[in-house]
Image (spheres, rainbow, N blue to C red):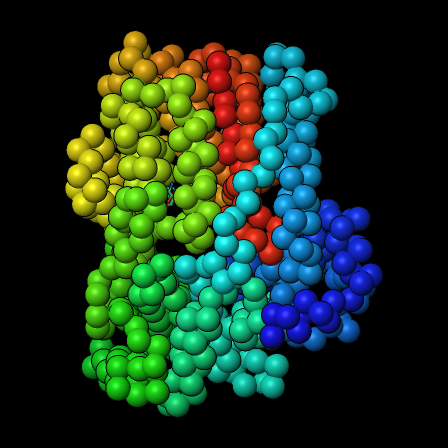
Length: 478
Ligand SMILES: C[S@@+](CC[C@H](N)C(=O)[O-])C[C@H]1O[C@@H](n2cnc3c(N)ncnc32)[C@H](O)[C@@H]1O
């Protein structure tokens, strides 16, 4: 199927992709409300979205591939070239913006090296986590499991199976197919739009390199009683243990009753219906426990390359204290721990912090501590307790929302931090605000008083082949 899709490419579109990357991809990416987010209704309906000229003539599978993995028509070498140029453009834009906000001399050219993009060791089927939606398929069947194109407000959602997507491993496809089969057999209706009722929602599939599989089924309880729900949970277990779904060999099956688009474990517990409570992964020789609610990089092999890159860039700070801000399961702090004297991780999600603490013990690392809470609340108090004279460095790896300015302020106002590594999967988004906060002149009103940072080196690392995304590792020093 992958080969067929590669061969079927329409040359003019390929040319567009190579010569007009920004225009082409922004339109391809914006036309749909798909894919990684959980809820169609929550997405904004941008009525002026532009569609690529030939979009309507493409098959649904091609439209989906163009939305989720828009670089799929390019060779991997071409993808890397394209991403390198994109990152260069983003950094040029950053440099321009910093020039407006800073008294430092930022010219219109990059004054620091942008190193060659680090490729992903694996390009196909690399995802270890996929979330599939339930919605109306191409044939109108409302119990179709895949990724949707269109949006709820416009009423033009079409859910397309993701079997042909190049970044999707076979096991994820298999579980999605069986979940579709299960909900089609179920008397309960699917929850397509939150206000329209229905029960069966997304399924998330997590796998690891040892071949273990965890599935998490999201379910809207609507008016059902706990007793009624338990009948459907039992049917789900039966299907995946003794029914046709047994072929998926799930190691864990979780169930979350969620009446909101996204609930944490604390808001609505992940109920283990059967199997192992956790999945484990090995990165750079360290073993990591990952709970249902915890973040883990979706491409294990490329995550190793990312953490190795960070370790290289952090070498100048060997021996001091490392702040791992937005630490998830502790992957960065623990993998960098051999070169540090002390590691302090901060993370919002409780399950992830429990994992991080467990992971430190599991790997016999006793110099790590992990704090639960919003970094903007935890870090300002923590900074006051850290000496101004000893070596202190920070690696920050926030989600797309970037860091709260109080986090940047706390880091910037601590004189011991001379070097900070910022990892961003969307450097042209909210992270750009943080770059300005790190590098701007003193701001009495916002109490940003510490010496300004400046970017000194950038390294893109490709964690997401076939998509336009990559991680940017950016070092700031002062
Ligand atoms: C991109 S992940 C990085 C995780 C980790 N560094 C890794 O490489 O696996 C971002 C993490 O930030 C956490 N997070 C989001 N907002 C936060 C906040 N305000 N304070 C602390 N952590 C936050 C998320 O729960 C998530 O685990």
